[in-house]
Image 1 (cartoon, rainbow, N blue to C red):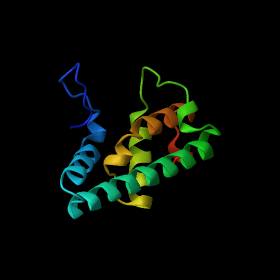
Image 2: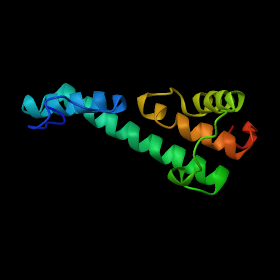
Image 3: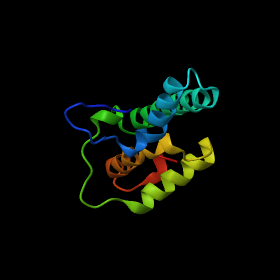
Length: 121
């Protein structure tokens, strides 16, 4: 059901969209399935919250919107990335499906700070 193409029967969907696509499909197919509605609503709320959190972090650290950060370098600052991830968990709680999409943003910000996590934590 999601997305549908008469010319190509294969379904192509980013993995991060699978849960919300499933909830939407079930919601539409089952005349307002309340469990699917809850999942869909939660998914939208989590995505919006992650977008705001990581957008704010990007602007605070780099002065740039997350979408405007330079591409990832060849070598990722893993210690910085892990420190930023742990700080996120400590400050915001669980690293959920919506936050996962912003792991790249953390890596880009670590590159911006030349591996110093101080501004990210």
